[in-house]
Every structure is written in structure tokens, then in C-alpha cells.
Image 1 (cartoon, rainbow, N blue to C red):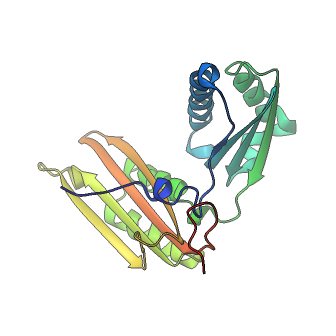
Image 2 (tube, rainbow, N blue to C red; image 1 turned 90 degrees about the horizontal axis):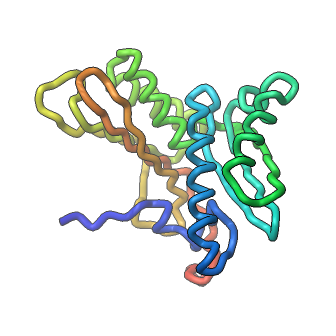
Length: 218
């Protein structure tokens, strides 16, 4: 059997920070976790047009801060901030804290986000673009943006084949066993008339200095 683990969880506390920053006792832990999941699910419903790459949630006493990293801040904010205000009211209804602070941060290199790359490939497949062409175009764009390596895997009834299979392409280095290697990983899926196709994207951005209690001392 293969011994696989999530590239982000493998590096958590070493080079990767937590995406939810708060502390709670046993009574509040379940409530806070449920609220975080509801907030993330609500933001995901903004769709491909919003270009949301990452969401970080921070809690302090009676305040919740939601940081949205997006490639299209203008779409999330909306005209005169209308979309941002609507989203803030929607998120406020999902949490028990009285104060909610919403920060929208622009991501300058969307081609270095595995989530956005995977969503772009899924959109291309939905438009009946050949999956090989979409994957190779995404790889070329990421390498041009400064990635040190990228690997993309698609699985399912590719090109409408009767038997499901896996195909993957890689360019550059993707050192999954190296803790200091900054690997951005995402899984997404696209539903076609032939069935569901799964997509996995690994993007290697370079090495980071290790920090935290499990860091490697030099």
C-alpha cells in the first residue's frame, strides 16, 4: 500500500503556517470549527470568477478576522464595495462573534496557486477543451510565472473513454520528500457528461527557511 500524506499537512509547523489561528477549550472547539468550515464553504461558492486562492481565519476574544487572497479583488469587492458588504453580512450570519473583519488581499501571481490552476483546468475541460492541451498550457503558464516545478494529474473517464485511467505531466522539480520545499497542492474535480474527473496539482515554488518546533537546525 502507498504511504501518502498531504503536502501541506506534512510541512505544517515547519515551513507552513496554520490557515485557522485560534485557541479554544473543549466546549467551544466544535462550534468554532463548524463556523470555520461554514465560512470557507460560503466563500468557495463565489466561484471561479472570484479567483479565491486562499482563506485565513483568525480569532481574538470577540472578533473574527477573515483574510481572502484573490487574483480578482475587484470582483470580490464589487462596485463601490457592494459585493464585499454583501459577503460580510453573509459571513456574519454564520458566526457567533459580534465583530467580523473582512480583508481582501490581491494575489499577484495567480498561476502560482495550485487551487486557481486546478480550477482553470477544470473550466477548460468543461468547455470541451482537450485535457492534455489544458494541462500543458497550465504548466507552461506556471513555469513562466516563476515556478521551479509543477506536476498535474488527471483521473477518470478522460476524453470520454469507457475505462477510467490516470495521466500526469511534470515539468521541473517537485521534491515531495523535502520538508523545506514550498509545495502548493490542491485537489479539485469537474463533472462532465461522461462522469467526474479528478485533478491534482503540485507546484514547487522553491525552498523556505524552516521554522517552528520541528525545524531543522543548521
